[in-house]
Image 1 (cartoon, rainbow, N blue to C red):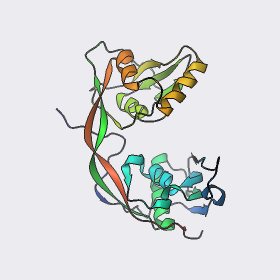
Image 2: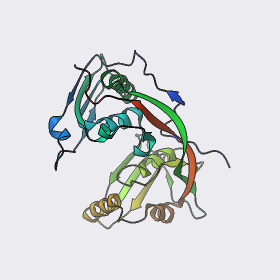
Image 3: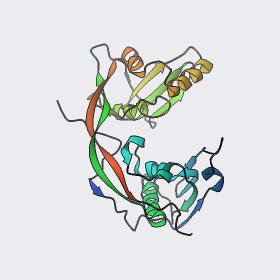
Image 4: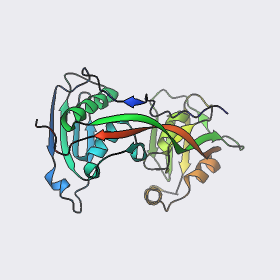
Length: 255
């Protein structure tokens, strides 16, 4: 059996030292006193990116780290207690246009500068799902489109267009499907495909079904994928990168 490959993040083990060239031109980091005080309605976060800027509102440092390194909760360890409770507002602008990957690298540098954040990466065996072809009829249509991969709700279904299997694996572990572990593509299928996942009979019922899935009370995604697409999600273990927080300060350096 060929080794599993975690496709969303390929990182080297060891300390993470952001490049000095990958920094924002100007940036503001402030404590969000309302959000840090807790209470109902004070935990909503937003992260907005454009061609050359990032705006993060009411975010925790935990959220910043996950966004900057493209990792999930189970891939961060060693963080202090306040990491997920203290909240901040961050505005940062690059000198010129920058792609999303560049903005994330710049955010890494900003966190290192303002929060004295030091992290290292190390591999760890973690539970995953391997996406494989089941012993049933495969129900995928090769896409003739050239547009980027997309997922959108329709009448009771989620429609996927020009979606590769690695991209579908990423979707399965993200909202709104929210599988409880990462998904790695082991289908051996190349190219983009058009397909749908049916959860309800209309748009209103679809919204309710997706909300139930997020709460853990909805239909089994494993069963839906196998019955409707002819694909199977097999529980396995694979080495995934884990971000270890070595040091951080709660009060950011002044702007």
